[in-house]
Amino acid sequence: MVLLYRAHGEDLVSRIGIATSDDGRIFEREPHPVLEPEHDYESRGCEDPRLAHIDGTWHLTYTGYDGTSALLCLATSPDLRTWTKHGPLLPDFDTWASSHLLRLKRERRPWNKAGVIHSRRLGGTWWMWFGESAIFAATSDDLRTWTPVTDEMHPMHRPSPGRFDADLVEIGAPPVETEDGLLVFLSNAARILDAEAGTVQYSCGQFAVSVDDPATVVAATDEPWLAPSTLEDQVGLVGNVTFVQGLVQHRGEWLAYYGQADTTLAVAVAPA
Image 1: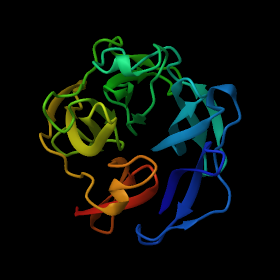
Image 2: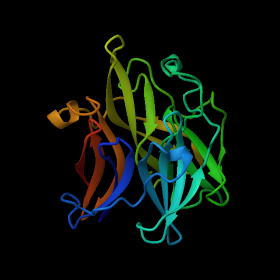
Image 3: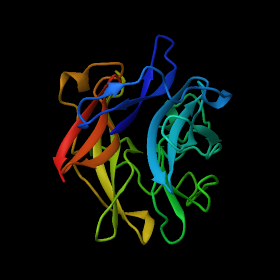
């Protein structure tokens, strides 16, 4: 098993590393990153890797951060180690535009991190779901040029007042396609605990769409399936965070890989 992960050194610039494992639990890291900043749009970091394997090529969506904007970017590779970058996919889109928390941002600017691409076409079209604050869908004919299904003010999935996802929803892992025609997503969510103190809790939920209508949510969880509970979840660079980005079926189990307090990586396990 191969794991791509975000890490940074003393310069606080994020890079994407690679690690391998036989059992999905204990990983050995390789000594050098496989993706690091090269261009202006990612000068302050390459973050949030998510993978899709399509026609023998690995497609990696990641966040390029320049210190001002966070943009969803694409890179491709035949072997997970040698990557070709294709730049930002949606350079002018702001997924925060409809948020009641927009006032907390320094200024209005493009911001569209977090994206997952389904590994097969739906209705002859490639689909991607993306967004921090709210979740949107986009389509493509060639996996390079993407068109959002709606404008910035009309996300397909938005926060739900009074719940664990009251203030933010964000794409987590690529979807799992079920036998009954659903795409099930692990997602991330946030609610503000104390606005004056600036404390927020991130937890993990799920939602589903139909393969026949991939831009409409048909079900979503009312409660998180994973929330901060351990010391590692609660204390770190950003406290009170469980943040899922990867899901794999391995030896009769589902393994969900998530970040703890923006500091360490962990895995949650469920029977397949």
